[in-house]
Length: 372
Ligand SMILES: Cc1cc2nc3c(=O)[nH]c(=O)nc-3n(C[C@H](O)[C@H](O)[C@H](O)COP(=O)(O)OP(=O)(O)OC[C@H]3O[C@@H](n4cnc5c(N)ncnc54)[C@H](O)[C@@H]3O)c2cc1C
Image (cartoon, rainbow, N blue to C red):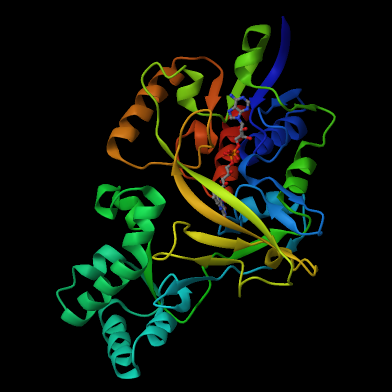
């Protein structure tokens, strides 16, 4: 039976952040395992034969307002100061998403667009994001018309495709995430810090894990080693329900299928991400060379098809935010609390959608509690 001081399950950003902090600041041994044949978790990227950096699990853009997180990650990389902008195909035109004042002027005749702009600013102010459901409840017929238009053209069918259910059947936390932005700012994120690591995400995580105190074992599922290893502390960034062998039931997830296609031309579309709320079965097309301005005569895109998550068949991507799922997670958490020196974290351990910065911040906060 082997004994290790710190065992970390999962070499994504959550596990790698914790490994780095424990190794460097506590000067303790860390063994980090991952079931996959690569580090990086869902943020894994690699350079293909055309020299294009591909994000294997879909487009990832780093953005944060958390200076501590930005400073932490910046120890391991320089940044391409990329600002993400998304367009959606609406009535045959590519318009900025989230729907903003520029989108309004693009899809409506000038007289209507001017009127809507004035009413929006008078009602809500400038430079604010108004959730679509709130816009619907204003009682003003012009704003309700706008709300219905956005709901139908951008939100409803996209949500049906993305989640396989109607917006009202999802938690308001999800529906509220889709705003109308009363602004001329076409960027998708307004965070203070945004960018793409200059050598990609995998390199960042490789550098985090490059420490004499850290040993990485890939192709290693926790279940296959758990009876052969003991530990002072276990940090588990895998699915919490799987850890408990699904004894209370399975936490549902939404999954995705990516069809990667190489085209024999320099560019396929006008930006890194084009959404298709209404047409086709895919929700969006990502084109990877935009992120780091990779130079090639070829280009690679991914068509993104939402799917139900099925164990053994595909990957867990998004937790499905509904009361009953939250309640099931809470029951697992209760069981987890009874285990001494076992910590759950990460998007799968916490059953929570985390952007990268939030996953990293959660690991940094957990680390602070270990220092005592
Ligand atoms: C399609 C998509 C796009 C996204 N885009 C963005 C974006 O643009 N910007 C952003 O900030 N965030 C984005 N995210 C979120 C980002 O992917 C997460 O924040 C990040 O992956 C969280 O890292 P993690 O370490 O918690 O989880 P993961 O990256 O999932 O890592 C968990 C690791 O644990 C391993 N593991 C699980 N169970 C076991 C086991 N039993 N034994 C061994 N290993 C195990 C897994 O193989 C995996 O490698 C996106 C997410 C998705 C799904």
